[in-house]
Length: 523
Image (cartoon, rainbow, N blue to C red):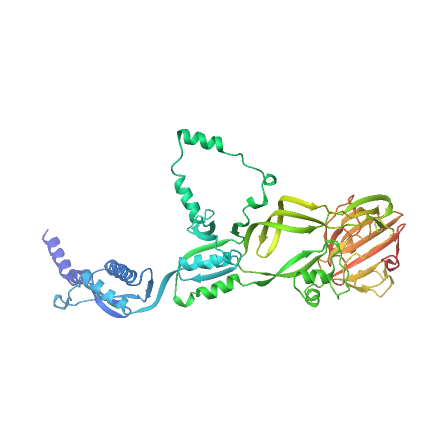
């Protein structure tokens, strides 16, 4: 027992310095600095971070009080350093959390490097703009309406977008109720009763149809507006440098810009008429369409041309009701003749214009009328229709299958243009960009539509009198085997498939199964 006690005392004496060090370690202090500026001594890093959070909260509250909804960005880099002591006499006093927090707050106040204000970002399709406040957003959207509503009968309001789970706003167009209508609504809050109600019912009239109404009874003018583009509005904290002034934003949104569109050629169209209708120079129309070579290039119904249309950034759809007095033409009456070819027709009656008074409801997209519905019509004198007798049989001639293009290879013997190609060309090649409309050269029945080995994608059409045509190297086939097609009907898009030296259409005409020179048959 004595030996054990002695050993225990010896161990205590040996370990006593380490124990003292542990006590000293327990009393370690953390020197706290913010942005390399000392702010005090604390006992733990948790306490230091708590002080910084409190300083930030106070700083943010001050900024909101001083500048409304603005946020300020201030540097806040916290650093902690252990402070060790050799003796109890060297221990430094701890600072209170309140003292450290106050020191941190002062540093945040003097290190502001940016201020962010509460603003709004408006997104219209691919276009976006940052505006100062909600009033600026409404004024911007109302300016787009005012282009077509100079009397300001409609205005915009911002609502939560029902199709979004987050808080995103969208725009809704509302009609502004005139003062007299508002008074009428207030009166309607007090319903009639008893004998007054019975008297109103007795005097009430059944609602009349538009045809029963007089022209003076219609409510003419604008009667419906909405935005045709999707609008998203979100709150955002942004620096003033990123905010667009309202006048600039209105100019960007309402000014017409030239926007490319596709126009499908209709019967009777000419290049000059199309160019004039879209306000284009004929040369510009030709330049923007690779399938056109010059003003004499052939176009056919269902051909697609690129045109440009002036449109604002924010599209507006609206409806009007108008009283119109106008001359009008009756629809042409066609009498089919099954013994004539389709290129033969005779006029049986010449037309003459009529005159009428109408109430028309029209739908517009920006400046373009996209639909019209005549809801009341009074004819002063009837229009006389043009009557035409026209053949129904496809003529034994063949039309050029594409508009434009140049012949890059003729019919007959030739040098092999590429590996795998034939030295005897069984048709003609018409160089044209991929995607050019390919039309049936003559009416007939499709016998093949699909892949044709070296021809790539092909269409074969059987015509009367033992004749047939083939269209090769297509990018897309638009008909099926067994389908009847008419002359000039769109059957495919040109391409560069199969054994091909570049984008072009390979075209063949066969008589009783033998290829012939197509140039002898094309009109």
